[in-house]
Structures are given as C-alpha cells and as structure tokens.
Length: 470
Image (cartoon, rainbow, N blue to C red; front, side):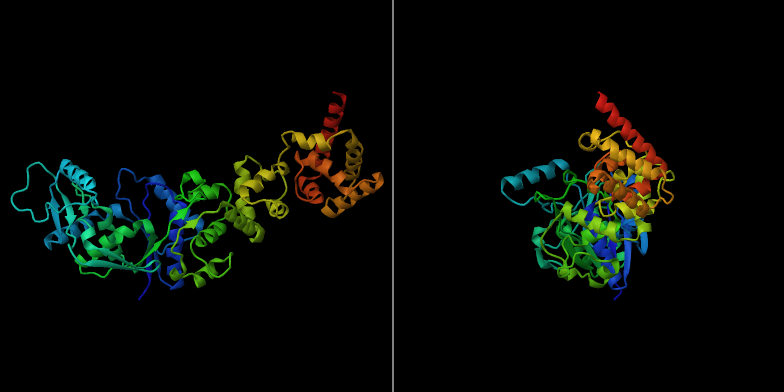
C-alpha cells in the first residue's frame, strides 16, 4: 500500500503552530514511507475564507520547507462532486431531507438540556412522508445507524469506541445546497486516496461520523491518528495570548524554520533523550506510535534555545542571507558597512533570534543614537580621556586594519598606562557602539572600520569634555 497523507487547513486564519505541527507530522510520515503528501485547502466557508489566509498558508509551508507532492486542491472547486455524492446518499436512503424549522430545533435543544440529555437531532424527518411544506428549503441529513458501534483504531490513542445511538443525523448539505465539513472531508479523502489522516484530537468526535459515511458509500475509511493539543504555559489551549502563534510571525521575529520544525516535532513526540534532529534524521526516526497521548506544553525558552543552536551551527552564508532581511527591515544600508557574513560570525554566539542579532548590529552600519546612560556614566568620564586619546593615535597610524593588529594596539596602550585590558576596552566599546555590550573589542573595531572608529572616538572625547565642563 502506498502511503498518502494530507494537510487540510481552513483558510479562515493564518497557519498557526498547531496546524504547522500537524502538517509536519503528516509530511514526515509520508516521507518516511516514501509516500505522497497532499495539500488541500478547505475553503467551503465562503464568508470567512480569504485569499490573504490562503497566501499565508502557502507561504508558511514554503518557509518551513514542507513541500507537497500534490495540490493545492481547493474544496470550493469541487462542489459538483459533493452534490453528486449527496444525491447518491439520498438515492440509497442513507440521507434524507429535513424540513425542521429553527424554532423547532431550538425548542428540542432546550427540552433536552432541561432533561439533562445530550442535545441531538431526534430524527423527526427521517421517515417523513407526504408532500414537503411549501416555501421551506430543506437541509440534507445523513441517515446515521441507530444501533451498533464505531471502532476507531487510532494510531496514537489506541482503540476508541463510539456508540451509534450517541451520534445524531448530522447535516451534510445546508439549505442553500452547500456541503458541510464532514461530507466534504470524506469525499476528498476518498477521491484523493488518503490512507492516513493525521490531525488534531479536536476532530476525534468527527471521526465516527465520517467512518459511517465511508461505510454508506461502501468504501474503506483511512487510518486515523489524532494528535493531542498544544497547551500554553498556563495549562490552557495555546492561543494568541501566549505570544506569536502564526508561523509567519515567528519568521518575522527572527526564528529559523529548522528551529521551529525541530521544536514542533518534539511537542508530543520523542526519540530517547535526543533534542536536535536534522530533517533526514526526523524522516528516519519519526513514527506515529511514538507520539504521546497527552497534551504538550509550549515552552518559549526551549524554542529560543533551539533557535540559538541553529544560529550558531548553520552555515554562515545561510544565516547571513536571513539576517540581511532583518537588517534591511531596520532601514540599514548593508552595503555601507562590513560584510553581513562577518557580522554573523561576530554576533551568532550572542543572539537568540535574527531580530535580536540585527538590532545588536545596527552600530556596524550607522552611527549610534547617543550613548546608553548607565554605560556613559560608568565609562565615558574624565579618567578615560587619556586612554581613548592614545587609542585614537595608535589606530590612526595602523597600516593593517585587522583584529590582530588592533588587539596589539589596545594591549600597547594598556601596558603604557599600566591599566587592565577591560578598563581600556569598555570605554572604547561604548564609544563605538553606544552601549557596553558588543563582540570582542578587536573584532568590533575591525568591523566598524577605521574611519568610523576614529570619528566615533572623537565624538566620545568631545562628549567627555563637554560633560566635564557642564
């Protein structure tokens, strides 16, 4: 049997973390067994589905590096096929038209709740005969079996049993003829020959209904695997209040797709004590039977740790290409400063995201916007006039502008004044960057460039003199 999985998002919102994890699990399972991964856009909700959301889903999948083998298929283009299947079910007496008014249904629900019963349709129109009422557009309901049970042999949760008497006759076509979710999903999974449906466990209650529709169509249902939900740190279902939940938000905040994928796969799946996996390793090791049955908790710090790991271990050129985008977002002219690859080498140990790395690197490409108050008060004071002046003199005559030569010059000033290297480096760092934190001082000086270094030392000396006189 050739494995065929699918990811079927609804474009009523952007690709969120839970959806991305479902897509990843489906993609990995197909890749592991050399199968086919399909993307299907479930856009039958015409009022809420948007083109922007569709674009964001496609862009998110592309950024994550989860290419699909077939699709994207759009449900909105398959209405004729759905109508055909609905008519087949009507002809087989596996579906019927329901003329119940909203008032009757609401009254029924109220009575059931008052009697502490589970609200469900009572089958009033199931065996209806006679002429239909005039002016009423009926819905179409599935004729669910009244007895027996549905066994869902879930690949993650194990055997889950549902009693048919607990399942009401769900609507499969609205009054305007539009098909509903449970009908379209069955038809699509059938036509696309899906063998394994991997989705969130919020769909588990839909599964017995869908299996019954498959059986009514004399078809074999796919295998199902329901992935537990993701919780926030407060134990509640992950939502916007827990931070960025859109995949593209993480891109904008400077996360690497490798880090996000690595983190998502570990939300509910494990392989021993291993934390870091390449894509090839994930394809080799991933298995649905190793997915946990309990909900996973989203840990932002763990994601940041992984992101920093990839910032430090990925190829410099790759990180530089991504950093370039974030530097441009800050309005920096990356041609007016050191090569971005050199900035990455200098900063990758000190940043957890590309956004942070870009923000910490602005001084390489433009003059600092003044000095941080605490740093200036501590390091730009009269006692630093002499070392900064001597440093400027040494730098001005340097023939080789390299970190090694710069390091020698700074050491020379420290020895001449009998000062600790840090007491020399910190005032210089503040003069060049505006703050007390930067890469090693010799690397910082080299990357800022000779002309800028001399100009910024001059500005710092003027600042010290002005503050001494005021």
